[in-house]
Amino acid sequence: MKVYLKILPAFLALGCCMPMACKKAESQTEKIGVVTPPVISKPEAKLLPLQMGTGKSKMTFSYTSGLALSKIDYGDGTSSVLEFTATGSPSLLTHALGNEIVAYTQFKLDNSGRVIKGSSYTIAGNKDVFAGMFSVTYQSDSKISEISHYDSKQILLSTDKKIYADNGNLIMEQGVAGVVSANYSYDDKNGLFKNVGFAWLFAIEEQNMLFLSGLNNISSCGYPLKSLNNQSFSYTYNEDGYPESVKFPVNGVATSYKVSYKVL
Image 1: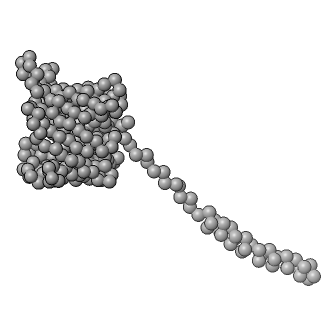
Image 2 (image 1 turned 90 degrees about the vertical axis):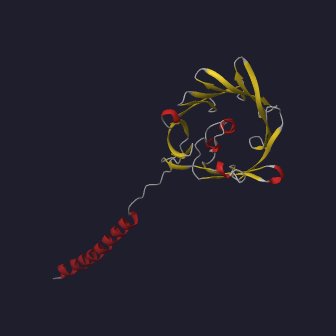
């Protein structure tokens, strides 16, 4: 009986320790829990547009090694080619029908290699006929302050002052005495030509405001003095936030263009 009494405290002590050990193990398990893997953000893709649309409305884009827009081939057989100096500044923009150049613009540059004047010519037979010109002033290295347009007799037609949003998008143009000549609005996605150089020259030469889609995409152009020229653009987007398709009116008909890209 004495033996049992001596052993009993040991059993009781062991019995008291076991629940505590279990609780401690459970506590450790609870503390370990489920490990949540870290969220790895996907790096932002840089895309370069290669083609828009199909058939006669197709536009195919070519670039220099420095990603400057150098050529647009149109589905109707016409094309525009931008040539550059050895230092990468624009020097000449030609417009062709098939293999025949029908018009061109020569650019004058300042000491920094920026375009400050464009003189346009049409080709009639063997003659180059002066068609007009534009001059450019800048408010910074990259932002245009004003563009003045002249006719074939070098008479001033208009001077437009450029107004920009804080993020750099062109949002307004003002003419004489501050009269608003144009308003522009944008979406908040990656611009179609975000990674493209000198697209703005095509906006001037081609009169296609889609080329203003640098930082973000142009969604509307309003012209208070010429409301019939108002234009709107709508988009669908790919997973990288670039336009997957663009819809805008062509000759009064809303036309949708699918965009294909190259990943940089």
